[in-house]
Image (tube, rainbow, N blue to C red; front, side):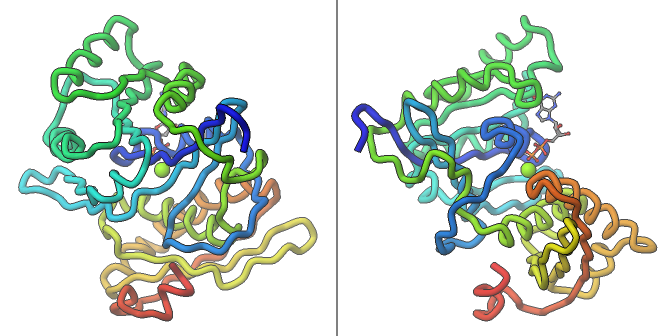
Length: 293
Ligand code: GDP
Ligand code: MG
């Protein structure tokens, strides 16, 4: 074990579009190298690993996040308290704004119950004036006792180095869990499935919360092109219609967004074919959880 080396688990939360994926991509660099083939123990738990001289940050997905709409149609995110207590640091990403809406207040109430230090990250500060950022920090500081508040731009990479330093401050001394060059512990197929799922949820604007799974039916290289057949599985016929969209427009959109990400990750051309299938109660099925989780 290296001396003075820090290591721990960090979870990143925040509403859709706030910049979670952008931040993650920026922190680990443009390329996702897949080096490790450890078996997957938890469903859809993307573990991204960032190693520096000082330590190793393992980003984990937060299981047990449930989104529901309140009476006003705002998204209310309920986070399993236990999963937040299991990590060393919680990163909460928010938009640069003075306005702290009902959705944010709801998250704050939950974060107050958590023992883990919470670092508030005010993202997209490239879109606002410098002076304004201070007022946003003040507004949030009044609402909750955050361990730290860090403004940054995930897109431009402003202040993201500082963010890493701040995270390290809160990690315990510990062993290096993964090799220096490990970026994620998920096998390729699973990451591809997760990309498609994420793009689908994004395009569907959360119309079908939690209601889809993605199965990779085939994935093979042929003449420098990666051919992928994947099936989006939903629970209801009505959902299938939404996912396909008018004249297939929605499915096409999901496919091209997902293909873009997959091409970047694999650094090769991708030929992606998407199918949609209805499988009632897939979530209760052992078979599907094992194979499509
Ligand atoms: P996620 O849903 O939280 O994963 O959000 P994404 O990472 O997909 O980002 C949503 C949108 O916000 C994308 O169009 C990003 O390019 C944009 N975005 C993310 N971070 C920043 C930022 O720091 N500044 C600006 N201007 N845009 C950003
Ligand atoms: Mg995302």
